Length: 100
Image 1: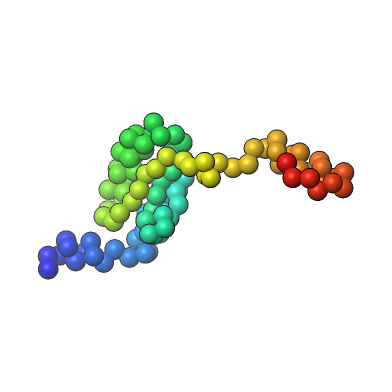
Image 2 (image 1 turned 60 degrees about the vertical axis):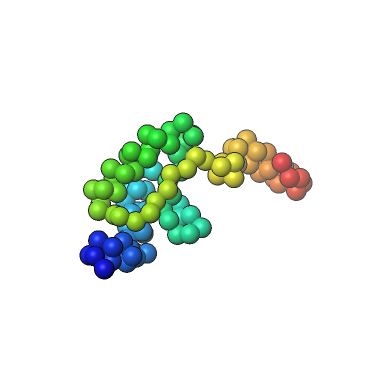
């Protein structure tokens, strides 16, 4: 087995965590996918190609050779609307527990 093949087979979780930490420090939103791959979440689908080049550059400098992903945001990634959470607080203050 070649040295390069062996290194690719032996990418550890520590390397993935280090890659994830480095991407977060670069100001990117990062998560682990269900298979344990660091995945960058773009602001919009049109930003994927730009972010992909940026992520490749960062990981190349880190000498990370494992898998990674770049994806657009899902509807479930969106946080609650601030007005909705304020309405819940006001309703709870009145003693009513009505969902917003």
